[in-house]
Length: 193
Image (cartoon, rainbow, N blue to C red; front, side, top):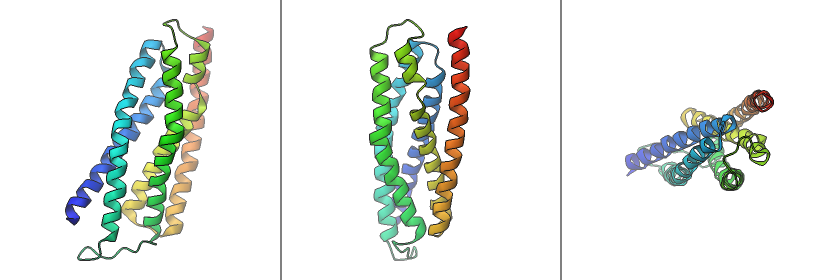
């Protein structure tokens, strides 16, 4: 049973990494899309992401809890181990961010696209397309997944696990800021020209 749970846990991680990577790439591409048609095709991808994230999280959390609870031949892992606590917090934080902030941003984009004509550029749609929050959120979520992978594979103590999350969050904020500034400059030039 342990090996099956471990397999399903790792399968959940693979699905999560795939969905988060797709979400990151889709968000970045939405920013640079040059037509309403491109935006419509990109937002169709978000339905796939939504369909994969929930089962991935269930596999990660459910099987992870089972794996930690096992105390037989596989070694004993205390529930208060730093890496266990931080892994659970990261996973739950990803769920909360996904069902609140990311869902809200996706709905806002879907609504703007549904109300759009084929004329390009449209001020309302362009404002949603170039919004900063979705970029910061997707970079932050991606950084949390990287931190989660580090914490789960290295099993550090609490301080190192938290430090990994802080470093990942700071790196994500810097990367998102650079991306947003670059895209806004390019959009300004494109819209003027």
